[in-house]
Length: 97
Image 1 (tube, helix red, strand yellow):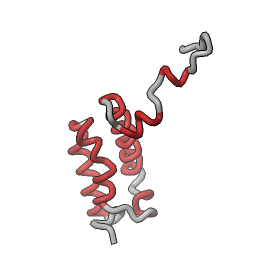
Image 2 (cartoon, one colour):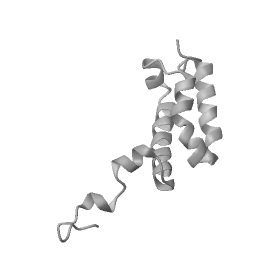
Image 3 (cartoon, helix red, strand yellow):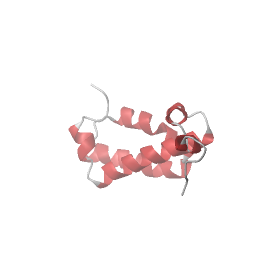
């Protein structure tokens, strides 16, 4: 448990949003990759409903998930297989229209 003392902002004890968004440090890249992988995995497990509803395309998903390939390469094969499955089942479109 972290307790605020001497008027120290508790947020300074954690990664700042700007660092997370910029993905310039190893920790920020890792955190971002985990965040994106979790969302991707959950959408896949739910049958791709969110991808289908929003007209997701493979190129957009590959772009969004590129950080996973860099920061968590051991998960990349799984990501590729879920995109391929989405394309086969029709809930991911092959390219932007």
